[in-house]
Length: 219
Image (cartoon, rainbow, N blue to C red; front, side, top):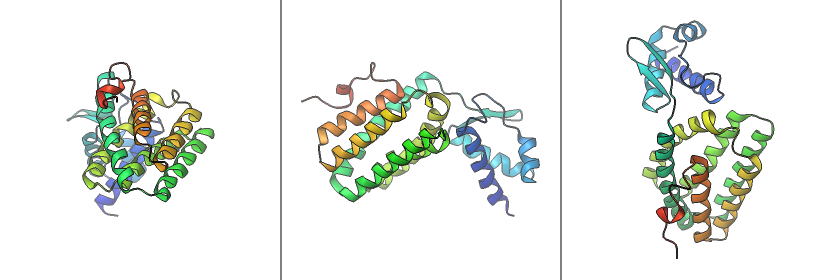
């Protein structure tokens, strides 16, 4: 098996461990244990760790060790502000290019997210929540925004896993997801923008510092 394939497998394994909280923030990555598990040298493991470090999921201390990252409140806030502005653009583009069928696919993802939460499959819940928001970006047909959002959502998955798994009610999340879809279908731009700003701001804890009129002018 090629080194690149092993590196990809180790990456997926580590990401799964992190998002399921089997590896928690500030825990060291057990390189030796992983090498034995995959029957490989440490070279592909370190390749996978470099990728995770680039994505902001782990911290590498050269010639010492690597550990799972720990996000400060300030970093979560900064990510949240960027996310809100991205989602505002995503809504506008989705309304320009999207069809009812496109938006109903988002509703299916919202249902799958809720079902995962109901059976306490938090890793799947995180995955489906991110797929819901990424589908909004895809509908807008802007490849550059999609590229930026893919990078951002790796960090957002990490925030969900380490900070907010138990703080977001599945029922509230499903309700807001469905409401977002209904407003998109009905082409109610102002209302869906208000809701997406609220939805993102609440998740990142930035609603008090950054009120709606920071992101959008009130009429």
